[in-house]
Length: 238
Image (tube, rainbow, N blue to C red; front, side):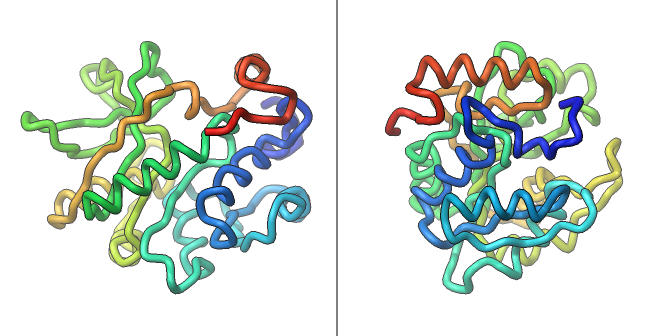
């Protein structure tokens, strides 16, 4: 973002982008929301606490998405059977989409459900790899993808529904043997497939909902899309 400010604190039409995401999460999960904080943790806590009384987990080192979820797991309420996992830089995500993902995950009795979308320009996203029967086999991050995999247009949104008992088994098995040297949460798909767990995909109908923000240009695009969807800082009901 070319700024010393933590990315999730950048304003999108007058609100920190993380606020949109937390509002969507709270609309679906009530008070059972955990926010993982790292860079500028205290300021993120202050901003998020204005939205709802959520729980916080500290990720002291930025070691990847899998590591972030591992930091969050001890703070998750004991009664939670499955977790919705989403990133703090997707302000267009709608509560209705998250609810539909969670319901599809529950009805299919899966251990892992990935929210996937099809993009005309998939650059920057992890690609979903399917077998000949259409079953999800793996998610390959772009930095690790070969030319054939990069041609795939079905991408990982970075949003998942995951059964907690499965996560407790899978997270310790993540490795940093990849181009980024991080613990990828995407690896839980491979671990699930190899372990005989139920792994599947829920396809989102609106690719714009999962657009992330990684640059000033991305932020401007999201602001334009939000303007089309409602007043500044306000989303249309899902």
